[in-house]
Image 1 (cartoon, rainbow, N blue to C red):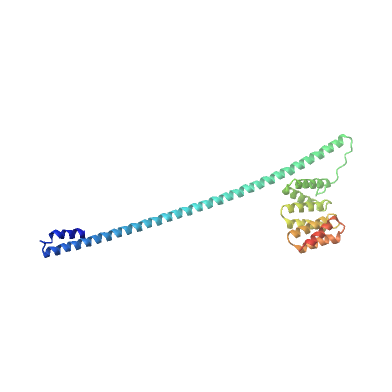
Image 2: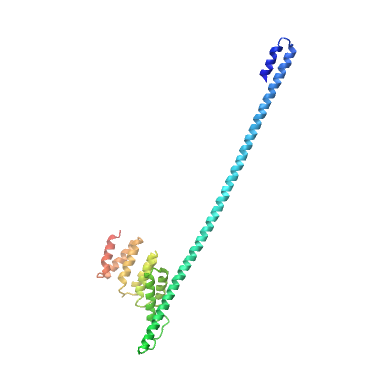
Length: 266
């Protein structure tokens, strides 16, 4: 604008009066001021637009962050529900396994009862005399004790640990002083060891020398208790049980193994 105004002065310079020149200069200054005002207005508009864009970007960022937080919370809730569902399914599976083992145990008891009835029938058919049944004690008869013990051993050998533990426990509760009781403690201790319950197994093994001081199962019980104590790093008790075995039963086959373990104790 200033350049255009100056160009107008060239052809008019010869005839323009001093007043005309002053008027023209005033108009040029006015145009320049207007141009500066327009530029400032444009700058303000651009600045406001920039601030508005930044505000919109902040709002969008907050919205995205909120959405991500909501989605993350939903995912955590879903994961918790899935975990709860897994626990319910696991509990159901454990219940089904227990029912299956109980069913197997009942089936074995039924089969043994049928065999006993069949043998009794064959004896009568062969002309044998039928003896009067012996008085039944509240804890059961020796035959029943043998059946219960054999059934528990069979279940242990088949890997049915829960059923085997229940069988040995029932046997020891009903026949605590039966000649098979020391063996039952050893068997139950073995199952407890397989289940990772080492301290409970040690307790069972120590019941043998405590309750049956003349049993020939004592060396095995002391050896197993000592070996488990070594595994639990209770070396003082391990040394106590193994030394008792070596000193009390020096001729037993396990005495040599006990000496070797004693030498290995730190």
